[in-house]
Each structure stands twice: as C-alpha cells, then as structure tokens.
Image (cartoon, rainbow, N blue to C red; front, side, top):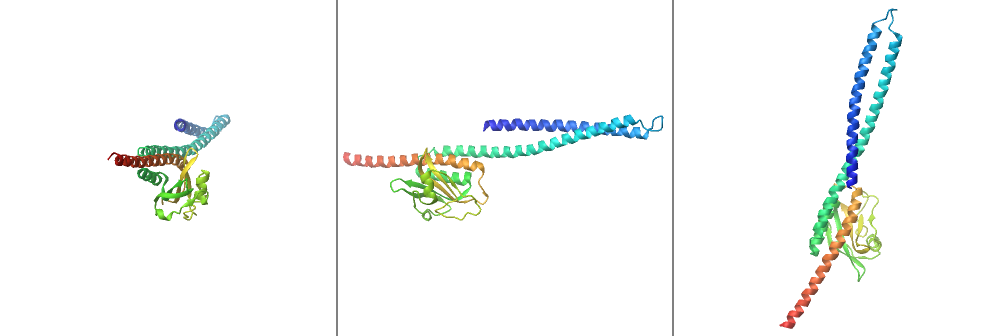
Length: 271
C-alpha cells in the first residue's frame, strides 16, 4: 500500500511538472505566433521596391507560423491527455485513500475485538463493525454446533433472532458456505429479495480452515448501493478476526464456568 502511495505521489508530481512546462511553452508559442503574424502583416502592407511584398520572406514567415500552430496543437493534445490521466490518478488516489481509511478503521476495530474475552461484548463489537464498516442493516451471526452439525443465530441486527432458522450443515446457502468455507455473494444486490435461508452475502467465520460459523447479510443500509472492491477484502479480514475473537471468548467463558463449578465442589468439600 505504501508503494502505491509513493508511486501515485511521484506520478502526481510528474503531472504537475508537465502542466507547468506545457503552460509556459504554450504561452511562448502564442507570443511568437503573434509576433510573426504581426511581422507578416507589416510585410504585406509595406511592398518592396517592385511594389510587392518580398515573397520569400512572406513564405518563410507563413511556414514558421504553420509550424508554431502545429507545435501548439501538439502541446494542447498532450495537455488534454495529461488531464485525462490526472483524472484517473485522482480517482485512484481517492480509492486508495478510502482503502487506507477502511483498513485503519478495521485495525482499530480488531484491536477492540481482541481487547475483551467477554462473549457478548465480542458479539456487540462485531455487530458495530458490520454496521459501520460494511454498511449492513439486517444481518445475523450464526455459530456451528459441531455435535449436532447445526448453525444457530447468536446475534442479529435489524431482525429478530427467532426469525433466523436453525440450518443443517451443508443445507442451503448458509449450510453450504459453512461446509465449504467459501464466500457467497449475490450477483445483483438491487434485485435481491430477503430470504433467511439464502442471504445476500454469506461469509464463513474461519480459524485457518476450520469454520466455526457464518455471517449472513440480508440488507444493506440505504446509502450503500453496492459493494466496492475494498469491501471484499474487509469481509475476509473481518471474518478472520471475528472468528478468532469469538472462539477465544467462548473458550474463556467455558473455562470460567468449569472453574466456577470446580470451585463450588471444593467449597462444599472443605466446609
């Protein structure tokens, strides 16, 4: 990313130099053109000894003016080309700026994710990340119960958790994503109709190749019309961080419960 920034900065400086030199050279050409035209007009108005303007001088000046016009046109064409390239450069710069901002936000969010081992707090942080970074309005986080091979919703936004059906591993879009570990995106966001078994987007929550659940998105915020290229990167990064945070917090919660149970038995035995 830093190399792209440096390259774009260098390219931008190059564009500015071309603009500056082109503008200066064009001004020089215009001044020279004006001077020659004025000289040509003088020659035409002031005949020579034979009563006519010196033909060779007029011809030379006319050719020089034509050459200057051609050089001017060439420079103008080059400036237009540079302007078009500059527009592409500006668009790419804004795109990279957005990517940097999103990645910076994701870094902050991932830091928050790994700053707690409270399972409910982890789910809440993931929910906020999905709303703010992805731009989702309705979605669910489903976790896989490896004993029953079923996926159940543990957190939702915009819909009731009871509305999300329990899904068998390998069944429907959600079950297939959990089984294969591959992302799912609908081809046309605008034409999508909400289906709890077939979400608009379904991302596996994976620790390496081990799937522990999925993120199912059913609706985007009003201002979010489509997915940008950076969104797909965010999905992948978010899924990895979210899976790790969820797995760690569940392990911690389980160990805390076991420890509490053991402590309870010890307290009974020692009383």
